[in-house]
Amino acid sequence: MDINIIIMLGGLMLLHFLFALRAFKSKVDLSTNKKWLWCFLSLILGPMGYYGFHGFIPLDRILKD
Image (cartoon, rainbow, N blue to C red):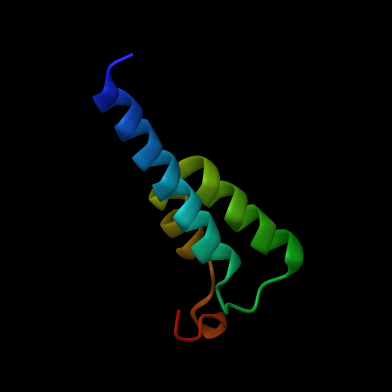
């Protein structure tokens, strides 16, 4: 395998992991199931899953996130 492909895949996996961690550590007041769903979507879809689910959270639940 080409070294560039390995580096890009590693960076992509790191990006998805960081968005899942950000969703997990968020101070948004959600139920445990919704928080796990948010983490799972962030892990699988990366930024698209993180911000996609973030758009469905009511604004009154979002503190300074």
